[in-house]
View 1 (spheres, rainbow, N blue to C red):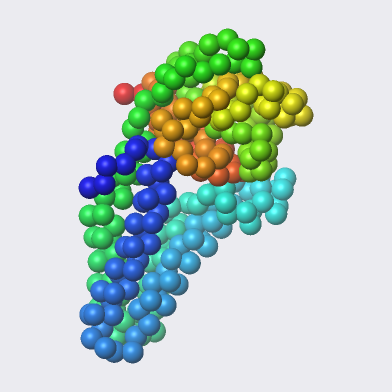
View 2 (spheres, rainbow, N blue to C red):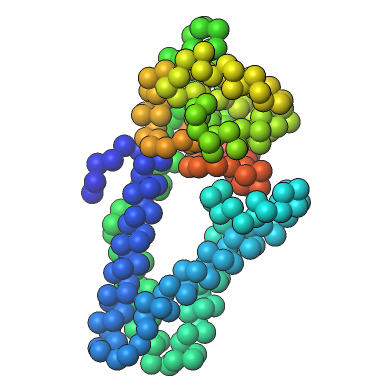
Length: 273
């Protein structure tokens, strides 16, 4: 098993291993087909595309009230919004359809899917994803904009917390910050903490002055120690901690209003052990 830092980096590796598992599935499917001219790769690709499409459509439908304010944002899949059960249903439906149309495809396709799932399981990717949700909130020494010392646990004060890693030069950070600022102004039951990575107050303050509503709980991390400690390899990164300080969810990239709402729904459902 690879010895990797626990954090968002593990999620990226897990996604690469998912692609490797798909490749294994294609190879095994072709071997089981024994040279028959069956498009195993095409069927598997159709299943993946159906999973992504139906998972996205159902997610947008479930959070339609939020997407209705900005309909075009429903097409921005970078927010990662996907409904797992709908994705699974889409993949299974397309797989059954392929097998109905080509009965000879049944055995190779079942073998391919089974091999892909086994490859995914034994690659350790599922363990990485689970491990990425285990660490406690780091107690790294940070600074407020005025130079006072502060820590994440000290600001969270026993509440569930959303910790956003950002920088003033980061375009996606600028795109999502108004969504997070509005959430902080609205949600008194959750601690929102914004940790600037690699900049000083001179760079961060002018950017923050443009935001409405204004942010509170803004911290500086000039050496990006927090990002390194959680394994963040890109900005923005948003971490979701339960009231016990345990990392229960994370998001790489821009958060849309709907995606944030879905993550907060899961966060509020968490009960610290």
